[in-house]
Image 1 (cartoon, rainbow, N blue to C red):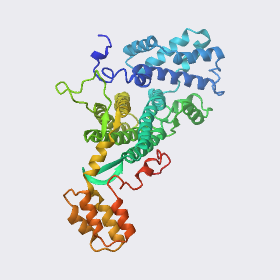
Image 2 (tube, helix red, strand yellow):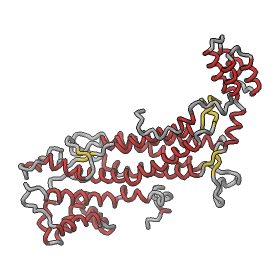
Image 3 (cartoon, rainbow, N blue to C red):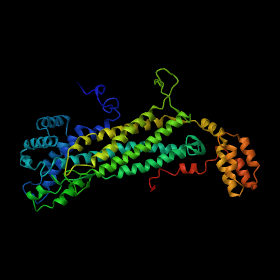
Image 4 (cartoon, rainbow, N blue to C red):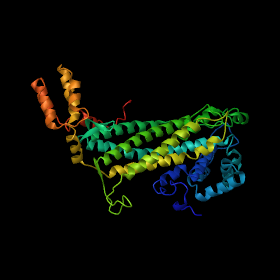
Length: 462
């Protein structure tokens, strides 16, 4: 059966294949094999640059270019050849080694270097570095740009709607007014922190042998400073060197990234649900696409499907991120293989996360604020000024201000006339009384417009 999206088991490779195409560069089987080839080749070249390994002479410019071409020009045909070797050997990393040895054998000037392919390495030396590179590149090239695209839209909307007054809802009930912009600014601020946590999570790597102590390395070449060579090699791949491991790099840095992505998913679920709620209240209209259908039986429907799809995918991503983070940091003794199949699902977690980001960006672009609907809600809830009135009464020492406003407003709606009549009856200084009489639910927003324009909050410690 051909790899048609219609026959894919996972919707990531089926229904959503086109939207997630950029992730294939980083999380496909092909990408993993190519990354393994790159690690093996670059390790071979690092060994050749070491003066204390005379049996492996430095490569000529032509040979170095040929070696780099093995991973830079790695093709699907090459990957299929590796997979055929894996079928025979039942070992994925050894298959890469055999394929590389075969490539070197065909070039006379490199034939003698074959025995230094995979030199002193265990499979996990190659795998942890390959995954580390893939994750680092996926973070920079796919994950952060798409998160930034959502965050930029949220921040822009916060400024655009900074002064759009809105009835707040605490516990789902009418509450002290705010502005739509200020509420979006809260999410922009949270996303800035989430983005920083994702961007700065360390991705670590190791290359230190079967149980992490360079035993084979030291027996073969005791004069080499293996700690220094290991460190420089890992850092040359853009990773953080971890000197103390068992056979496996313990994935603590990866867990930090996964945890950060899980927290970002939570923020975005919160955002998606709030926007969904504002749409249901009529605060937002959604752009219409003439050919689209909202319901198979109700022609009038324009559903907030982008935010619903985002919510579902974020919850899947969050669950996978947390499962992966919990699992990958545990290994029996010096090594067990239970992390191997789990690692292969990293792309699934990031796939759902990226898919949600795409949906959110698309959904935000469809939104149009309905100021009239916001004003209507505010005008129907003058009781929200009770907080303002009783607070001013407190300042001037009037008796039982909270209880007086509670008796006037709790559990009922009052009109503008009722509220102003109550204010007019108060024994307040004229300036304070006039300020309260001029107040409306729409104007009782405090510093919300200023807060909405504060910025993304990237430098905040909170």
